Image (tube, rainbow, N blue to C red; front, side, top):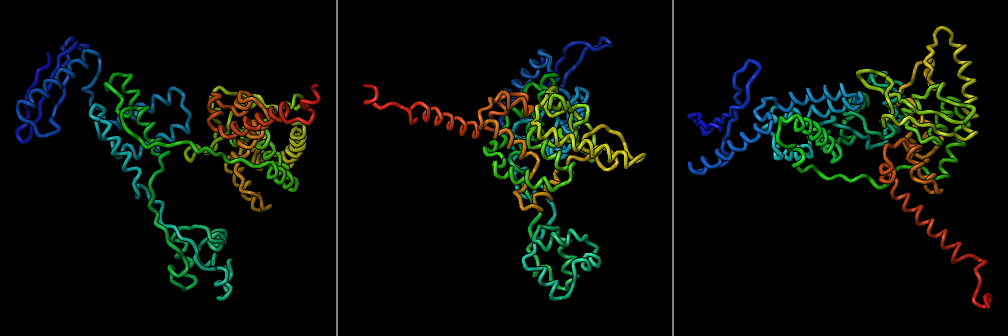
Length: 470
């Protein structure tokens, strides 16, 4: 039976001791818990509540829970992540976990696992949603025509870049009205000998986290506490009883209309073959940009007009460029491609071979399809950056690689391709993922199908009139 002993002279607390089991040395194991009333109580009320706590504590020990564990949340989180790493969780995922833990540990890391309550988490989520939880630094945007001022003062962009120590690109971006760091605005104002407030609008650098990001923190806490619950260190998962903010997935996905795609294809004819090939693959395959960058020549079957997607290229500040499994592990997929795109890949292959021969010993034979000038794999951001410049150069809508993925899926669904086939082409682990993302497009396609049936059965020109049936 649990023993209860009153302790402390300045405050009121009780030490609860349960003797259960024996250690490796044969000695009895004692488990301890300190109970403190959370509100003002009479002696009789305290006695009743501490007896309840003692009963619950002894019961948890009998069930095998280690509720006297002294590990704090931050200590256990470090252990939990090491277990995840050994289990094969992706490096980028672990990197994101470590980033999220910075805020989590600052708030609740010092709390013992056994003392962590839903109230602690709810307060943490509330704080994350308040303005000022992180600071990006003050930003400035030109509120006057800087180009006119430079002209009036007979100062060139090159000269102000040299004298201020800023890059020419930064000067151009500032003149175009893009947001820049306050330090940049001050440097330009100094060179123009004008007050910064006369030239720029200053924005606070304080921000709050979005509900989506707060939910990321919640899910990680829940994952860590779930492991603690399985290991019987805590009797329940406090995160399961907490109340994080609600977040609903955006219903609309960013995709191009067919006319936009035709304009993009037309503009690609004027671009280098490497970027032309990469963009065509993005358009017709539905692959993620990292999967395109991770494609190797031995995964292209020119006879069967298909490619195999089994890896991705990623970048981390800690590891640099590295190869990783696809987002959905074990979802290696074969994708059929149009003959027109295979022809572009063949032309690019010829250019690739010539480039390799021109480079000579400087070339690294990495085997990747899309490489830097020395044959080494490219950063995924390289493709994004090129598409941004490409769209600006040809006055096209803003292009990001993922928009092509959504475009391909939308085209297939609207033209009657079943969701299972679309899901496999995209590399989704579950068909439900596809239906969730493209639900509005599926609904549109269903409406069009309904109209098609009506046109055939009820509105066709050859439908007979009653007089014709006589």
